Amino acid sequence: MKPPYNITATILKLTTSISEKLGEVKAYYLDKPTPNLRKKNKIKTIHASLQIEGNTLSEEQITALLENKRIIGPKEDILEVLNAVKVYEKIHEFSAFSEKSFKKAHTILMNSLIENAGVYRKKSVGIVHGKEIAHIASPAGNVPYLMKDLFNYIKRDEDPILIKSCVFHYEMVFIHPFLDGNGRMARLWQTIILMNEYPVFEYLPFESLISQTQDDYYKALKLSDQKANATAFIEYLLNVIDNSLSELLQSNIKKLTSKERLEYIANTEMDNFSRKDYMTIFKNISTATASRDLKKAVDQGILKIIGKKNQTRYILLKNNKLKN
Image (spheres, rainbow, N blue to C red):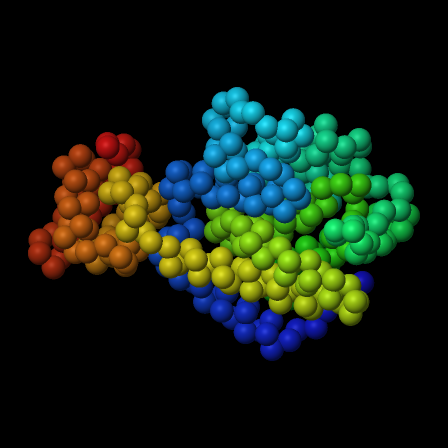
């Protein structure tokens, strides 16, 4: 069965906007960030997703844990972060359309936090927000069948992956297949579904905007529950994704150092480019800054220069390493 939702004018407008931004992201090679930016975004993602669930650790503490440093904090919060780090380090090993892979991710994410991690619940549960029961989850006996249907939907339905990822997120929270960890799994798996078609979502911490608009997140869930379809929640999540891509495109790339900009280029497929091409990616730098960057890379043997004046091109020599 196809989960119930309607394709509204708002959804069409947002999917068009997102698609245009994804085209810009690819054109500017923003889907291939430097290792340093990847690490920062991973930390933001883990922090935001766990913060929604009440985790108290800061981004600085999560950074320390990633660097194998000891920190002071609640034992359970530390374990949640360590588990999340393991999951995100293995993110390419999970198959978006595999229920077995889905359960394996939950096993890692909730290891030692609950009994029977990776196993669907065998009892009924209610979801509480504040002091009130917000939702009574599907009967435990129905969970395996509902999850099988949900995975069949994302495998076979012809709607865009942007919409299907949002539907999966909503339906998974609604079904509540595990005793705990459902919210963080829904956010993780939406990322994995989107990554299947758009690599930038591995590095796009849209969970940060969900965390910042947490009240709206729960309102959209509640409204979708009341109307018995996912439309309101799809609109909310597509807006979050659209805003996240806007932030990425509007980020002040000028703040990057010369070394970071050249590292960025080294991680792209731009192995033959002009100064104009370089400035197309780093829009906020001056012509003089671009010239200094490129001269530095040529002097260090990172780039090879060919042509003269308006015909000048730069060839990336990938075997060399950038110096400070």
